[in-house]
Image (cartoon, rainbow, N blue to C red; front, top):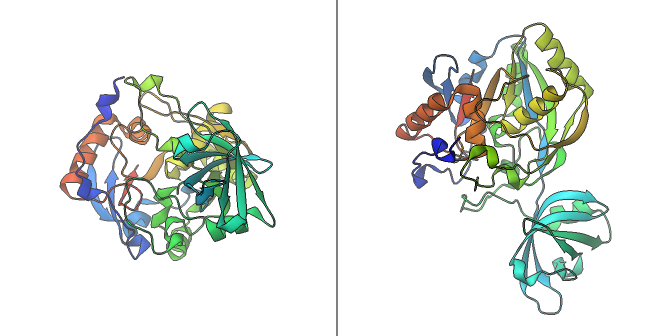
Length: 342
């Protein structure tokens, strides 16, 4: 399959640069995956599309303030370190800028020595494995020194860092937010639950690989980066019971979708509690085992996320929906509007 099949023209002005003051104030484009019919609604209308007995699955990963600015020991050169993945024992996979200044053995100092790291090796993709040195609790120091690693297409500073977290974010570990969940408030989740919708949680720590451009010309040749997931026992039970009773399972975001489909694919359409790493790549032709619907934002042209959405709703339906969204000036990407596929 040619990657160009998932391309479309997106005016830069439609890339949302800041979140709306009210999380629930965004628009909602509803796509019927069977007929291709499109309906323009508000996000607060989502509850009308949910039925008692539906299961809404959210990703409770919390974004780390993973962007650190430090100085190279000995020269004072400015170095940016972006945390990607914990490897245990104070070792992290990172991206550094400028990379040419950070070779194995290089030390970078942050916050006047409150935190230090030493480069141990260079990865195959050009990242760096570093080991941190500090006194105290690492995550408390990171909260003090780090900033939120906003996507490269957002050029404005974020006044409130919590606005790049979902209201239910609990498990620290993501390099980017599971942005479909940014639309919810605690009050709106209560309203959904009061309708009889079951709300369940999985954890998938979002890595930058999710957003890395597809450089292959052929879809099937693209390799996804692995991301860590956890499924608690209560979520496995809730989803399995719903599937057995013919009730719908709706994922909030492509990260929740990929987690459910990874584990469902291992156990013949059932979930099992546990944790692991997933590099699942979902594109048209994929047979979904768990999810019946998806709430998501609008994604980049030729991205793996557009391919995933196309697998669920059909490429032509999705591209038509995107053309409509562009014509109607929906807001795109992390701080943009939402799309519901049922």
